[in-house]
Amino acid sequence: MRRPKILWVDDEIEVLKPHIYFLDEKGYDIETCSNGIDAVDLIRKQPYDLILLDEHMAGLSGIETLRLIKEARPETPVVMITKSEEENIMDAAIGSEIADYLIKPVKPKQILLALKKNLEQKRLVTEKTTIDYQQEFGNITSMICSAATYTDWIEIYRKIVFWDIELDKSTESGLTEILYKQDYEANAAFCRFVTRNYLSWLDPDTKEKPLLSHQLMQKKIFPEISSSEPLFLILIDNLRYDQWKTIQAELSDYFRVKDETMYYSILPTATQFSRNAIFSGLMPLSIYQTMHDMWVPDNIAGEGKNEFEEEFLRRQIIRNGLNIRWSYNKISNSQEGKKINDHLDSLMKNHLNILVYNFVDILSHARTEIGIIRDLASDERAFRSLTKSWFIHSSLYDLLKTIAAKKVKVAVTTDHGTIRVNNPIKVTGDRETSPNLRYKTGRSLDYDPSEVFEIRNPEKAFLPKTNISSRYIFAMNKDYLVYHNNFNQYASYYRDTFQHGGISMQEMILPLTFLESLQL
Image (tube, rainbow, N blue to C red; front, side, top):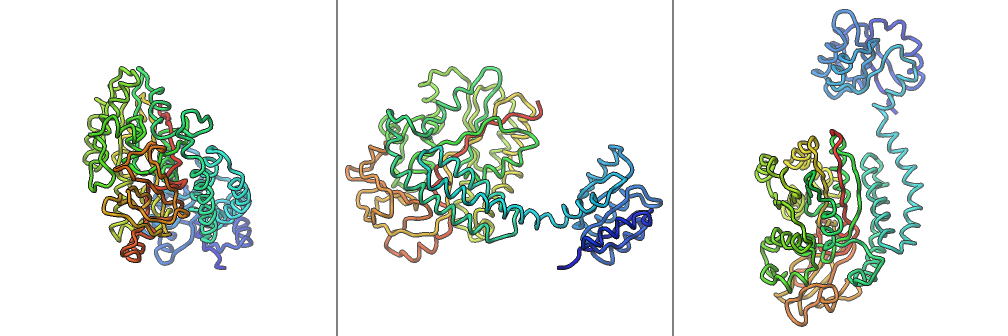
């Protein structure tokens, strides 16, 4: 293994000989230099793994030397060492993106720790993560085997997402594969749990059941409305829990989590059903029966299936006897987001503001249809990264940073998640069959009942039907439903795409997070 190469720049370098001998024994090659000018010349001629830099030197100061180092070798980590504890010097050094900051007199083990942190962090994190996950693997497996309630599955999913994100820090690809298999086994068991219990959750007399989409506003959002501060409900369409945890980390300088609960999406886990249920406070069959002209049948292609969310919300507010000022806005591009931010003062006068952001859903569909997007988001880790990149450059991030300084309540949620599919299931249907890959509804469906969750009587699941013999079937785990005609072509095209509408933890178990500002 190659010994890391360190340059130590200090005008009292002779005094530091014991430190250098100590680091040499620990496996580091240390070169020394007594002034900034010579140090910059050395750095321009050859690369170093890390530079230890004294702040107070004759000639070029440490800060001046640091600036020249960053120009010549911006990728090289620099650890600043100084006698001074003046805050302005610390600020200047940190502002120049130093890797660490140590105050003299320094002990050899302090230097060793700084080197390990900056040069061996990935290896050490990988080793620690490997040990921790290996210990937790058995616990998660045991939880999967014994899971008996919807809360058990929420805890299992939380743990799997935690380790999925933790393994992003690791360079050990084998661990990711192990977790992927554990997630697959967990989803297989979760699907069996849902198929046994879903219809009973819709029975008003059932006591042990999760919060569902159509109950979200009445039970969680409306009780938070107050006259003293506006409530902003931000719904990011098609957002998985792991994606939320990734972007939540970007808000840590502005908000803390006041409360995080999980709720379950209704079936199908698709925008037309789940989000309409959220804003109407009704199951899809009730929407169809009471507002028939606002329900677009599932077998009709094109947009328009979520055009009436604002009206659904208006009626739900009236039905709950709320006398409030409120707004509903749907944001599908940066221009619409900027317009919302420019009119923030008017939103601050409302009791409730609903903001629906569609970018992640748009990204998911674009990934299926555009090769370069599929390459950029090749798996769950890459999809999280792309979602994070959107978020930190989005009008939503700007809005949240702005309202963090105001007296407001903030809630963030989603309507359903998505899952990367890889196992095609053959289905036959007529031209009236719905096109979604994770569920189908129609009258002439032919399939293997053992491969899907079937609902022969949609009314039991409070789902509308297009004719008297219509039924619904749902894909489970990582399956997707492909017509028999041109099966191989479509199976290949949609394999490894992110889809929604069916049954999986990623699609059904969803976050509702209340945030409170750190700036008030």
